[in-house]
Image (cartoon, rainbow, N blue to C red; front, side, top):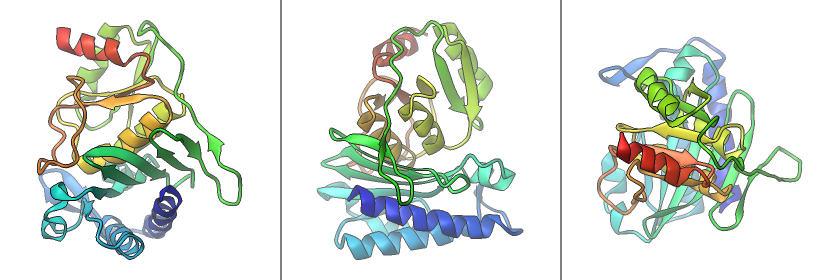
Length: 265
């Protein structure tokens, strides 16, 4: 299933780059939440491909009408799709956006596929089996989280759009040597899963379940941990789709330390 999901994410990424290469209009769904035709067209493509390959499995996708995935919470498994995670970055043309496809089974994230359209880098992970960077026509290369076991000197990544100064200050209080703002949950997930950074910290508002599923699966498959800010697991068989209790993704060795620091603040 991971390779099929990755193939769909690659195709969506190619579509997105076609839009990226030319001028495009920007609309707003609500407030300052942008959307483009790349979001919508990639959403339609991903949903059509997944529905064809996995008939009967609900697809909870960001740009879909919620009526199309009614009842997903009662299903044994469901896809969670963010067709263009990091639309602000897409609009800013800074390259920090991804396609994310995650699978949850019995309410838990089990599979994640993430593709970076600009670089073409592609990643897939299956919890309990492993995580890989998968180039076209080449053998999968295993990826692994970092081995750092102390918060002193740890490298954090934080959201560029969700109060980065506040979260940077929080990371510094924990002993971080850096807390770099980056776009897209999936983009930051890759940075942790590959060991480039130790912690991805986003307390409070952390988007929606389609921002969390592939993120969680890839990080956990690479040996890390990903929970809500109180240490509780994400539940994907709930009708509640908002990540309003934060998101903490770490190399695993630092997870309890980060959660304890969050509780003590």
